[in-house]
Amino acid sequence: MTLPAALAGNVSRETQEDLARYVALLEKWNPRLNLISRADIQHVWIRHITDSLQVYRQADRTWARWVDMGAGGGLPGLVVAICAKGDNPDASVVLIESDQRKAVFLRTVIRELSLPADVIAARIETAVPQSADVISARALARLTRLLALSEPHIGDDTLCLFPKGRSWADEVEEARADWSFRLDPVPSTTHEDGVILRITEARRA
Image 1 (tube, rainbow, N blue to C red):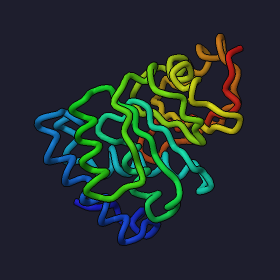
Image 2 (image 1 turned 90 degrees about the vertical axis):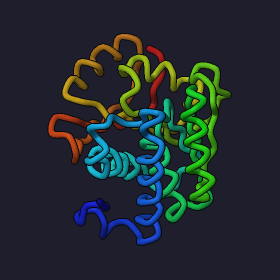
Image 3 (image 1 turned 30 degrees about the vertical axis):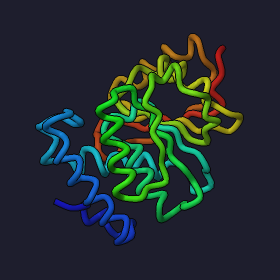
Image 4 (image 1 turned 135 degrees about the vertical axis):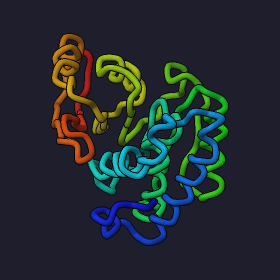
């Protein structure tokens, strides 16, 4: 399988090739590490690659440091790094992942694809502050928790990108009890009831 035709025209041939190499490594390592569910393997391009691409496209190309929290199998962090390799070569992606085996996988992909990325193999709470321009996290925690985890890495102009499902409005209401932030929910192109929460100016209330 390859990138859907509707998106292929917006991705360079080199980026498509790197995405295909990443998917091949994901499929190879998945039986040992459970990077994504077995049921999702046959739908990996839509459910994971395309989903990650839409997160990447919510940030302009002026960012210098992108932090992906709870990186897991590299979604969206490695997809971001693959795209940045061609679009924004001076930028870097930091993937924070506490599972040491998954961290080895992330480093393997970074090395084999020569990606502008680094791995912090530690709990998010203990990671050195990153002064991120963009922070992402996918299927990691509720919004209140995500903002708390992001706090050490947030700067004056940091953009947080958090994909959420149908209960996203409830999570936003819950988070506003402890946090103030500007919010722009962008409808997902891959999940009917999903959104990508674009959050800026996040501060404790």
